Amino acid sequence: MKLKNIILSAALLVAFSACDDLFEPTIENHKDAADLENMPSWAVGLLGHAYISNPLGENANSWKFTDVATDDAVSNDIGNSYLKIATGSWRADNNPMDNWQYLRASWQYLNQFLEISENVEWARDQVASDLFKKRFQGDAYGMRALYMYHLLMSCAGWSADGQLLGIPILTESENIDSDFNKPRNTFRECLDQLNQDVEKAIEMLPEEYGDVNGASNVPAKYTQMGADPSQYNRVFGDHAKNRMSARVARAIRAQAALLAASPAYSEGSGVTWEQAANSMAEVLANLGSKPIENIDPTGNKWYEDANGIKNLVAGYNRPEFLWRSNKNESADLEKDQYPPSLFGKGRVNPSQNLVDAFPSLTGYPISDSRSGYDAQNPYANRDPRLALYIIYNGSKAGTDKSVITTAFDGSNNDAMNKFDGASTRTGYYLRKFLDMNVNANPSNTTNGYHIKPWIRYTEIFLGYAEAANEAWGGPQGTGSNSYSAYDVIKAIRKRAGIGENGGDPYLESVKGDKDKMRELIRNERRLELCFEGFRFWDLRRWKVDISKLNETVKGMKITGTNHEVVDVEKRDYKDYMYYGPVPYSEMLKFDALIQNKGW
Image (tube, rainbow, N blue to C red):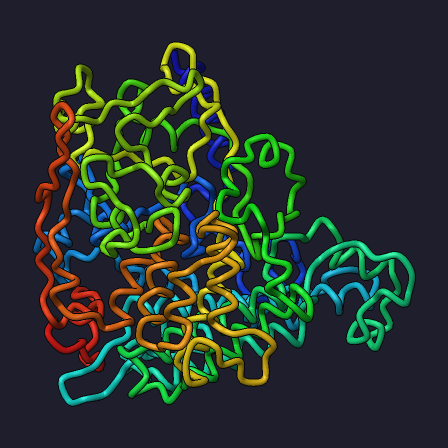
């Protein structure tokens, strides 16, 4: 017995002595700046956080559909957070539009990366190492500008003492000894920082990524660093496509300029419509000396090309896209948005308000007596985009092209208000973005391929038209450019298939009237960019009358052959809600922050 105890004690002694950290803390596997300088694959992970946190959505399934908080749509999901804020629940401590903490945390990663990247050996080849450093730093500056734009859009606002404020600007990383109680910088200062970051991105990055053949095709700013084609391709070649580029950085600057020149911000930003128009024109110069001639003829229905999306090579774009998400294979979007008969939940229900915004086929608004609109046959002879973007009563959809009956007296759950949480509340379902080759049947699901446009050239064209109309005296002013707001709208409506006898009589009737053209441009923006997340912010930057923010959402109740427009959902926005709030949690923590007026 004693021998057994002696053997056991000896064994335990050996075991304990073998674990020399049993009573001491182990060395933690945490990396500091010095560690990362010798580990480029870890260092670039900091930059990777910028794409994980991309406010445009990391992948093709990240649609937020903020449209249900506007006059364009409602949701049949009673728990939808955007529905709640639209109907009176928007508060500083209940804000689904909030991106303050998320983007600010990722901003810290970018600042850390910019500091660390200076001393990282990115490659043993010194020229390649210098090129990698330039590319990665340019990428970080461009992404920081993107964050700033989205933070200004959601959080900028006027204080009670009349200041237009943005966010606290941080250009250095924070640590445990930092002073976190920073005041908000002015909107103008934030915009200046954004523009500085864009300039650095443009200086460091290529216009577009891609392999080159021959030394003469290597951009001069890289040959000055000693780069040959193989080194250039190693850093900036095809494998890097779809990352932040100089072209994308210019587009972010143009978006920010349009925001700053808009009525809600112009007084405090100092940015003019002319500056915004020229920023947009700089981006459109990518399309050649006559951008209008190179507008993508199928750019308004890019999502319909299922095979084209499926076969899209990584990083490559069709002409409509300036920047996009990665390709995604799934049936998730269809499961959420298909009508119930196609095994969907019909979550986003377009409004009658939006349907009424589509003109007649001749181009006249349906409120115009010349349009030929028939209220009891409302979908006949309409703008072709209506059928492209919205499923209405009698539309065909799905793999079998089934007829969808949304009428109130319909026989299945596609009918208006037939089944809570799946049926349409407005008489309409979403078609835009959906792949009609997808079978969402749970027992026999077939996936489709989707991409999400982050920046479309159509958005830039419409931004130019909006600013140009204001900047240069009306629809036909061009400034130093070769095209006008009128030219842009003419091209977009022609692409849509609007007009009669080869012309667009309504457009021609307003081409000399700045106010009517403004109304038309805003309407074209509403139609072309519907469900892409613009409407909520556009209404606010335009500072539309509060009655427009609170316009009751309507639907179409069809019984037999009778078509009746009915109220569906009221809106409850207050006049200070043109601007979003600083999060209440941040206000509690930091007394240096000033809240936007009203919140």
